[in-house]
Length: 116
Image 1 (cartoon, one colour):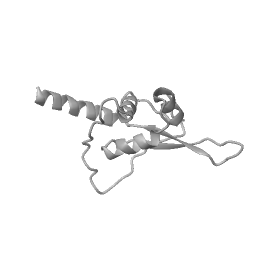
Image 2 (image 1 turned 180 degrees about the horizontal axis):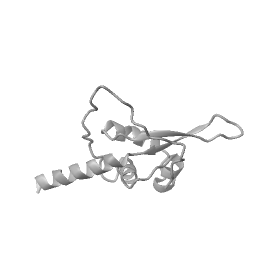
Image 3 (image 1 turned 45 degrees about the horizontal axis):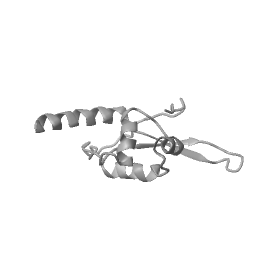
């Protein structure tokens, strides 16, 4: 699991509009989106090579897109990662804020209690 550099801050943007209610859909079990969501909910911050090493899939961008479509507010953090050939190179780290993990778990617990 990666640690975020100390220079990366996570300020929330002020808005005069209420954000939409957090009501994500869960991905289908066993899919790459399900595996990635599990990693996010474990508090992991990861990039493409991390994801590929765990899943043997290089499709992290598509998986993040799918999760966002399902209502999961996955954050993209751009980190400078210069090389000799590309001094302006950046890489993307992805994460899910822990408050959304807690809310999702609480919501799923209520759903299970109502169905049982």
